[in-house]
Image (cartoon, rainbow, N blue to C red; front, side, top):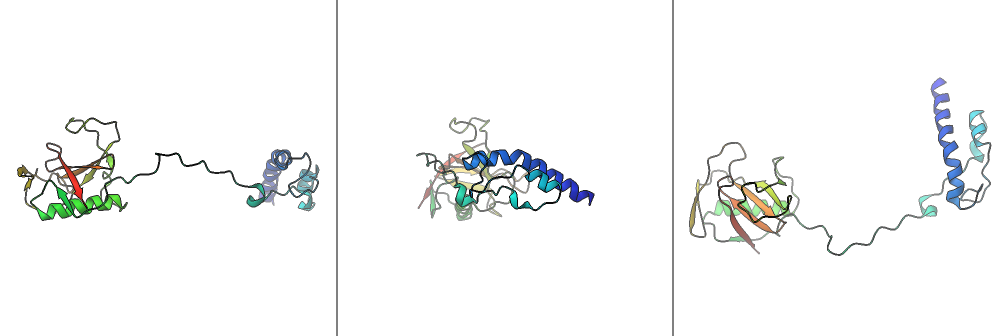
Length: 199
C-alpha cells in the first residue's frame, strides 16, 4: 500500500506541473484539447480516491501535430565511405590475390559490411606526412588481409617488399581518403600507392 501511495504522490506532483501547461498547450485557459473544462480539484481527486474522469486529457500525436522536419540542405547528403565497387585496379597490381582482397575490402566498406577489427574505419592521422595534407578525419584506415599472398608485390612496374606480419592484422593497410581516394600500403605506412577502382 505504501508503494502505491508513493506512486500516486509522484504522479500527483507531475500533474501539478503539467495541468497548467496543458491549458496553455490547448490554447485556452482552463480547457483541455477536447473542449472539456479542466478540474482544479484533479489533484484532490487523485489523492483522496475520486475517479480520474476530471483529469485533463493529452492530445494524440495526430491532434497535436508533429513538427516539420528541416528541409534537406544541398551538399550535406550522406556519402559512402569508399568509392563504388569495381572489377579491377590501376595501376596494375601483378598479384590477383591482392587485387581480389583490395576490391573486396573496398566493396565491403562501401556497402557497410561489418569488418573484423575494431581499428577498421578509425581515423588515420597521416603523422608521417606521406599522404597529401588534409583535415583530421579525412583519412580512414582499414586492415587488408591477404592470406598467404607472396611478400613481394609488383604495382605499376615497381616492386614493393611487404613488411613481415607483426600481428594477426598483418602489415598491409588500405587508407580511404574522403570516401574517394584509395591508398594501399604494403609495408605498414612506409610507402603509399594511390589506386583507382575501375568499374
